[in-house]
Amino acid sequence: MMSKYHQLRSDLSSDLRVVLVGQERVGKSSAGNTILGKKQFDCRFSSRPLTLISEKREEDVQGHRVSVVDTPGLFSSQLSEEEMKAELEKAVDLSSPGPHIFLLTIQLGRFTEQEQGDLETLQKLLSPDVSKHTMVLFTYGDRLENTNIDQFVRDDKNLKKLLDKCSGKYHVFNNREMENRDQVKELFEKIDSVSEGGRLFYQKRSSQSLSLILRVYRMIYQRFHWLFNIIFCVFRWFEEHIE
Ligand SMILES: Nc1nc2c(ncn2[C@@H]2O[C@H](COP(=O)(O)OP(=O)(O)OP(=O)(O)O)[C@@H](O)[C@H]2O)c(=O)[nH]1
Ligand SMILES: [Mg+2]
Image 1: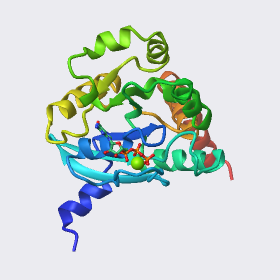
Image 2: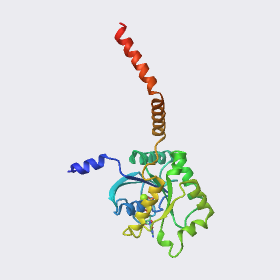
Image 3: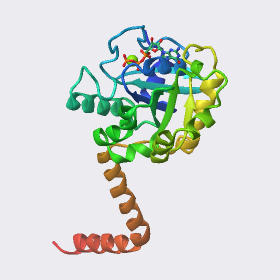
């Protein structure tokens, strides 16, 4: 049975909410496992895509309650565009009140035209606003050997273009070394900087409009609360004196 503590923890939203997106077979599920420090998502060696629905797993990692949502591959060979859109929307719902970061997962050394369209696809299926909450996560860090990742990025103008269109941050994971927790610590630091210490996160359009209406209402109320009070008093007076 779930203890009261665990029940309470699962009722609260996680401190750090991550959604993994990217092409099929690029190492999204493996990266999810590396973040959580446990084999929570299926990442077997296979010739066909394994993740076909969005799924969430949560763990306590380095003092944070972290939720990771794994998604099917963009440009899926198995799902239609509508089905993919539904899975991405589900991923956002699973990360309620909204993900701090979308990790656009790219296999190091594979950056074809298809990968270059990942961010646009994500924006088309969710909203243009996702870009500022997106950072690039390179997998297959073991391929780097002695190459410097910053130099690698600088040398690829298409990669630089992609980074200019999102948060500009990137990170490398070697998923073969799940026990290397420094790579996770560094990722958290970068997410912290993009999300301004967890303050900023992606919100669905409807929630964005609602929070805008509330902000405008609060602003009007703060400026004109004396007027609201007078109107309220006048109504009270009429109520009490006129039958
Ligand atoms: N060498 C190496 N292999 C990796 C790395 N990350 C993932 N892999 C391998 O790449 C293959 C695909 O990994 P997954 O994590 O299943 O990729 P995915 O994007 O979730 O794939 P689908 O869900 O099937 O679309 C697996 O065989 C992994 O072991 C890495 O950093 N280095
Ligand atoms: Mg997967």
